[in-house]
Length: 257
Image (tube, rainbow, N blue to C red):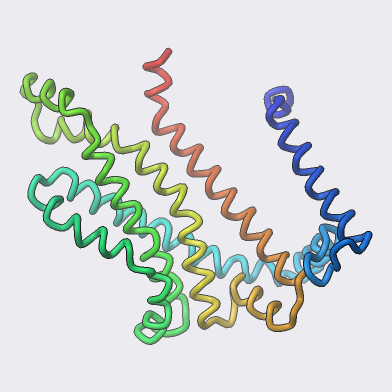
């Protein structure tokens, strides 16, 4: 198990990370760039430990995680369902595709103040903002995954007298899985952005609230700590989706073998 973990790639990744952290610390300690502007790894670690011990960072992380994950899951489910529906339907897809593209071009972050007006400053406004950033990209990727199926394969299935359900389950859905998983990996950052922007607009708790409070006090270290926590959160969610995707697409590896 240990030998599998410490591969050459892992070794170089850890080396690059150590080099970046050490270089940052040296630049900050020697005063090449003042810690007021960039803080330092040691200061960030010290502040994180303090916030972790008193539970402050975990409380605010839970609030943001709840908003972002809810938006990610519900947005992905709705996006996949709509993408499959429009992709399979010969009439519905071409009709509503221009409207979906137009909706996707809308800067939905700008809808934040409207959402606060409609549903208040609580969980709902952050959830809907995260949901709106997730649902359209997932829908478009699912739709393109369905449409990208080789027409020759579809014709072969029809020659074999496959039903529409068999065509969907055996060909269209498996082909779109990689598109769906790819869109969900991008949706992770979108959902977190939605939750954070919502907290910037109006919130009394959450990682966005911490960042906004620290920026008002010109506290660079206070800004860096929640930013790194968000980075670790996004990376962890991405790895979870990748593992889930590898499990769902394991049949591809079996075919190659």
